[in-house]
Length: 344
Image 1 (cartoon, rainbow, N blue to C red):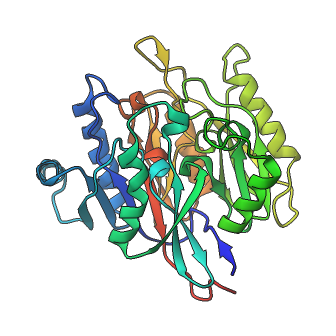
Image 2: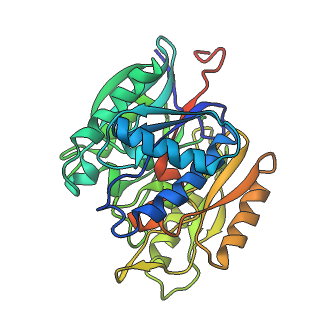
């Protein structure tokens, strides 16, 4: 049996999201978060089919009305009644891999709300299995506690990850790096893990990689960069950049590391928000980038346009969504198209 986790830029059959519904995640601003989420769904649906999880029949009607008000014409959007505790489907949904025996396989990681931070999480822990059943894709339950936002691959055997999430004692107590590398190799088909240390201020996930460093093509990585030495994000991001520059990928190549600017400090209720342009999503025809109505938005969009020349790059407002401590990539989980000859 061989496995491979496709890179995000490979073809998608669909994308899965969960409609924001938790007022405690967006206190006093859930309506505004829904407005931004509508724009995100519109951007996604212009490039690939969108599957939206909703809480109940009444919630489905609410979401339908929201979408009808947004779109002038029909879009490839389907609603699925699969209740969740929150909307962060990158972390709670399945990770899809190619399997030489099963074809496309959904990995159902154990979910404990980022180390037990936000009970209850039972519905979120059930979401991946229910989603896979709805998609008619075989599902494998995995005892490891892992969130999708902590995994970044190039599709050629290389995984970027942070020690602070995968080796967290509140997620996987007692596991060694060697044991985790062995298990991830078997589950994802990765042969090289590049470990990073550090997290951005305000990130309640303890340092998800999708806020820090992302592959843009094999051998090329963007890394969030904060040039202000007085900013708390400067030092940890410098460490991540240095580690990436020392690293080689699964094919022995040194990584080309490209600085991706960080937005200026954004706050809510006196606390810093984890705003990062690294939280972009690569769809079939576009790259969807969180923007925050700040001057660095244009710099990030220009850079990503240069790095993805065959895709349109679109900024989606996330100034409210990020108050929930995540943005575009945290909210979306791609379902890859199974390649012909995937077991080769």
